[in-house]
Image (cartoon, rainbow, N blue to C red):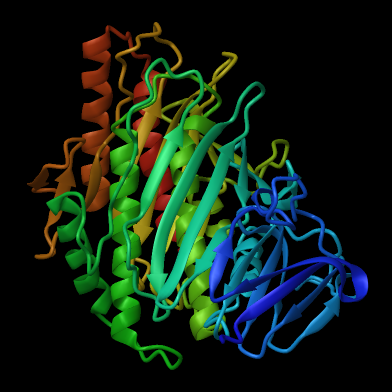
Length: 488
């Protein structure tokens, strides 16, 4: 008989009704499990006061269904009155709170609580709280509110599956996104990254299921495959010794992360948004990209140790000075600087930055407003990635215009992605994911040209009479891109 067993008791001191589970298994909701096998409704959710494990059992119990909420790992040959058992963060006891569990016949290869805590720590300005009894970090990013829920983490014998839920917080009903992917215990992606969006009040919600990584680096389009190869070539140049993990593997992991961020934002922005808001809807995909980059980093920190050898940093003062500012304005939720471009005023928020593990590059995103007297400002969302030496590797932008009539078929102008292919050539990846080799001398030059062309084409298509300030928004964003380069 297997000794991978756990017995739950309804009362303390191992008394009252009890139920034993044998063999490794997962139960996502004890509300669906009764103490007795008869038809009387007496479910086990939030109703366990003591527990015993067999000599080969490791069990992680959770205070919420679907493996969320407070949690603790219990080892073999253990007996607890749950009033005496604190959760992993020593927040509270587990008495009458168990709603789901994962039972293993071996010690789990990684500590999922550590991964979650690492992830939370990567949102230092977030307010960690509960919504509907689920833990999340509520953050302000680029003058909008977002909610990033603690990840759902499942272990099996070969690796880890991750799910992240995110909200763009709105007055009536939130936008929502769900991210799923899987990795092995060496940090390789073993399943595709999938992202689904639910954008509220959209007349038509397209299928935004994005499958980017499968196996080595097999993407939904050849474009992303080439991007990944290009990323690997660039990232390999000048890489130093990394003690805690194999350098080539980390380069490969980072190449995948960069290629995902590039392709994800291009795919989503080309969908694209017909709604007009304060910028949070259009910035939402960037928040998704950051959450993936940070969760992968949180996992690597559990596998390989803390991110102590990071050489890339972001200097906000250099960014500020590059735009002619002397101090950050903090009158909004996020710090920002106002600057002039061709006699018009624009506003750049402090960029959001996510660093990859050790010194292998970063993801940066920012919102730039055209400051007007209107109720809402026209704005541009720009996302860029950088290699381990701090060199720009990719850039993409999209503009939301408010001075237009509502059109259900409207697509916001987006630059497409400017980046490098596996030959080191600058390429443009348009909304249909076609790669075009360009004659641009720099990514910045290519971005300015393609973003300007997209804006003018959109105006012509939908009969929008562009103002000089709207046209200048592209030049202003190019100045912000240069400021980001200065800050890295």
